[in-house]
Image 1 (cartoon, each protein chain N blue to C red):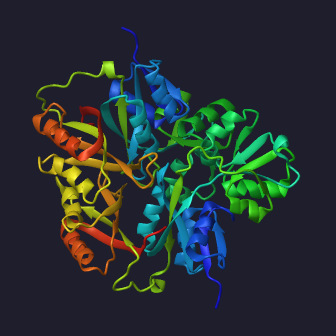
Image 2 (cartoon, rainbow over the protein chains, first blue to last red):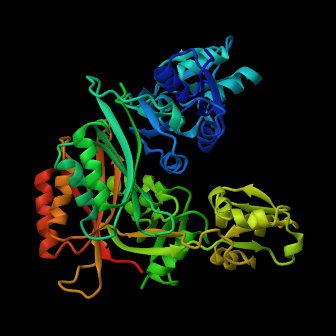
Image 3 (cartoon, rainbow over the protein chains, first blue to last red):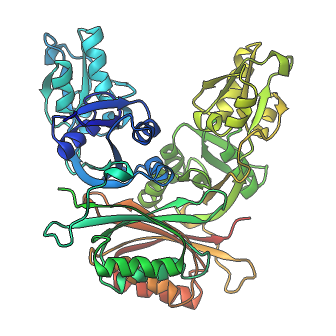
Length: 280
Length: 280
C-alpha cells in the first residue's frame, strides 16, 4: 500500500506535524506548504491524500482564514485533534545554555514565553517566520550563541537538543486541528457508535430580527449541544454574516438530520462541512 | 478650548485617520501609535482624550485583538463609523505613471488590488508594514521608479499625487471603527431619540446545552435585533467562549434594560461595552 501523503502549513517540525502524527500515526509522508491555501490546493488537486489545518487556539481564537478556505474548497472534515502547544528552547549540539544570547522564533511563540524572557533578560528575542523554521535555520547556519523556540519534534528532526522544556507562560495553550480528505475518500459513518461525533456546518440566515435565535432553535429544541459558533463576513453583502457551527452528533442520527432539515427552512444557505469522531 | 487629542494605530494618513475625521471632524490632534494596545493604553493613561480602533472589515472579518483589548481596558465605546477602503496608487511629484516599476504597500492592500496588478504585470509588488507608511517612505527616500497604495488622505499628508484612483478589486470593502473615551467622558444618553442607537456587550454563558440559544432569547423574545455576534476564547477555560454582541437599541430603553437583566440571569459574566449612535 502506498504511503499516505499529508499536507500541512509550515516547515517540517511545525505543531501541525504533531497534529498529523496524532491523527494518522508516524508512517505517513508529510508535505510542508508555505501558505494555508497551498494546503487546501494540494489536497484539491490530488497532490496529497489528506490535509491537516489549525482551526482555533485556546489563547488566540479562530484561524479565520481557514474558515474561508473550508467554504471555498469543499474538502470534507473527517477528523479533529487537539495539540498542546509546548514551547521548548532548542539549540544545536555544542551550544550550551550559558552560550545563548539570541532566541529565534515566530513572534507569537516569543510572546507566549514572556515570563521566561523576563527571568533571563540577557536573552534577545529575534522574530522569525516560523517556529520549526527557526530550528532549521540554526541547523543550517550554526550560530554559536543562538537558540530557537519550537516543538520537541522540531528538535528531533533538525538534530537540536532541548535546553529548557515547556517554557510557555500558559500551559492551557491548545490548538485544534482538522483532518481533511477529498469527497470520495470520506469514511462511512457508523449507524451506532460509542465514540462521540461532531458535525461542522456553515449557514447564512435571512437578514431579519431574531434570525440567528431561530436558527439555533433547530438544535436547542432537540437538545443538540453546540461546541462552537463562529461568524464570518458574507462576501458582497456588507454587515451580513455566515455562521460556522460545530455540534455534538452524527449527521446520520435522526435528531441531527431533523435539525438540519429544520435549519434549511430557516436559512438562505447551508452546507455540512464534515462529520467526524470527537478529538482527544 | 484645548484641541481634542485622538490616538489611532498606524502612520498619519492611515484609514483609521479617515475614521477619526468622520467621527470628530478635522480640528483634532491625531496621535499615531505603533500597536493597537498602545492606542488603548494612551487613552487609559489619559495621554489622549479619545481613541479610534477598527473592529471589523467586510472582507476580512473581525479584528480579534481589539475585542480582547475592549474587555481588558474597560474604555467605553461612544461612537462608530464605517469607512470605505479606497486604495489609490500614489507617487511623489516628478514620478510619472510610465516610470513606476515597484509598488509598496501593506500585504493586505496589495492582495486587495489583484486585478490592477494582473492588468499591469510589469509592476512589482513590494510588501511594507503600513499603507500610509509606504507613502511616508516615498516622501523621505524619493525612489524614482516607485509608488505606493494608500488612502487619499495619505497622498495629501505626504505631498504625493494620485496616479490611479480606487484600484481595489471589491468596492464593497468597508471597515467599521469604534470611538472610545474614558468612563467620565461618556456623553449622557437621550431619553428619546430619532437617531438609531447600538449597544455592544460581552458575556459568557454557563457551559450547558442550549446556553447560547437561551442567552439570545433575552433579545429575540423582546424583538431586539442583533447586528453582530463574535466569539472569543475564554482565557484559562479551553474550549469555552466569550460572546460579543452588538444590538440595536439604547441601554436606557425599557426593553433593552429588561433584556440585559434577563441575560444576567442566564450568564456567568456580562458587561456593557458601550451605547452609541449608529454609524453612517
